[in-house]
Length: 347
Image (cartoon, rainbow, N blue to C red; front, side, top):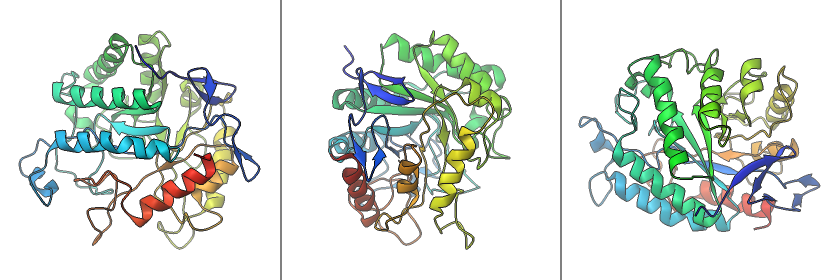
């Protein structure tokens, strides 16, 4: 029997009938009902391109997808002890370089006909079960732009959504939130228009109908302004990304005020009906400063998610998305996030 059930009530998240971080506030701001998370997009990923998989080798051996997932699961209790309640995976992975326009690797859990590859299913099941035991949620993404061409056509995209929903229902999974696509308003990356922002609401509605509304479904966007009304109307919760919210001197400069404005704009959008707002990707940190993107989100009543990738000349210990991954809380950046998370949640 599942141990963890996620739902939404009164504009916030609930686990097993109790609001998350029940009764908690921080510096006068409500924390109860939030869902703090970290992007671990490649936690169940494998690269099937023999020309690129060698790039992900460990110092002590070849790249090993099973090892990566095992080590990820082993790290989950430490995340939970610091107050993390959700991890974000994607059945189409994410760039192992963090950002890269050219992506020759083959990291996708779907076959061209929309069926899910058995090895990916097995790794996904192990993560969901481990999170369930710990009282944690999996935000499960289905599609990633540069891998979307794996699917043959629009019909197989729909079939992929149906296959995932059917698999989750058949297993009685209750601790998963669905994210249809990663940044569906990103231009020039989607092989099928039905995943992109203009039509993604069709897939949200498909997943909800297929699950008989047993699953909570959304999609993520980078928009500073409100998403399309159809997405706002269809989504059970909202997934903005804070990567593109930065100061006038460039992408590496945080802009906490921009986060506050983004949340305000999304809530003012046509179709918004009080859904909780959850950042599930943001690569701006400065956790040692009194104001940063994490703090700005909390002050705005939005949950926040940590996106950490390995920069040039950084070590194996750095980055939760860059293959191979050191899943432990091993770097200054990781310790900064988890330290602030622990303070905010009182864990």
